[in-house]
Amino acid sequence: MSNVRLWLAQNYAPILTAVVFAAMFGTYIGESSAGWKVAILDTAANNAVVLAIVAMAQTLVVITRGVDLSAGMIFIMANCIASALVVGSPGEVGLGIFGVLLAGTAAGLCNGLLVVLGRLPPIIVTLATGSIFSGIALSIRPTPGGSVNESLADFMTSDIFGAIPVSLILLLAIIVLIWVPFRMSVIGRYCYAAGSAESAAYMSGVPIGRAKLVAYTLAGLLGGIAGLFVTFVTDSGDAGASVGGTYTLNSIAAVVIGGTSLYGGVGGAIGSIFGAFTLRTIDDLLLVFRLPPLWQPLFQGFVLLCAVSLGAVRIFRLHNRLDGFQ
Image (cartoon, rainbow, N blue to C red; front, side, top):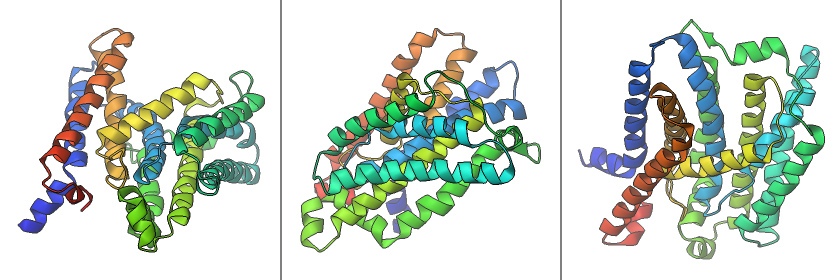
């Protein structure tokens, strides 16, 4: 029983976020005139998964006590690259996908090298590199356009067995192949240690630089995956800075809503995923209840404020602040 209580205490934020999302999505389905249909589920999943992947990328950086302001720009850069490369024969499509993921990984590695070797604040580094990535995206797509392999796009945005969106399977694959190995690895524990108490971790022999480098590189890879997937959804590339900025801010909001501490060392990708799903469901609820779209920031801000307040209450209730990192 004590183990169950400990697990609930450590994971209450993701659990609460999942419950809130389930309630909001259930309300959306119940109030929607279309009801529960696979097409509705596919659309909702496709939109939510894009933000969820970007939020996962942001989570990796936040765990190390950093903030990636270039997350959305890596995302749109990958989107524009994909709209130019993921076309043609199966071989060309495969090489295009590899090129997109390589570009995202390289962007994350660049961020990591500047933070680690340059010893610069992550917020300044990623703000600067985000502008560079945005410029690269604009050089590829000065105006929205391009295309992607139609058959592959149709498959990635459809469902299997007439019930399960492929996008959710993709998200599950990312969790299993990227997040779980990272979380269970030694380098993953190093990232949590660096975010919890960097000085103490360094004095204990933890390779802080290597841990941060891995976190930023994986974040870039996830940004590349998100950009590739949104190309399948939209069948085009869009280098609009407002798009990248929106995804960056929403990814930070999703991370906080999901229970990951901006002070580092606490949280995980699962909570961020449900945080992203919750944010995307707000749009659907506004549509169902025919509320003005300008109300969206109000509701998002309210949800974010509640999440931050709950996190603060948890910290204030601790007799020893180090208990928060257990």
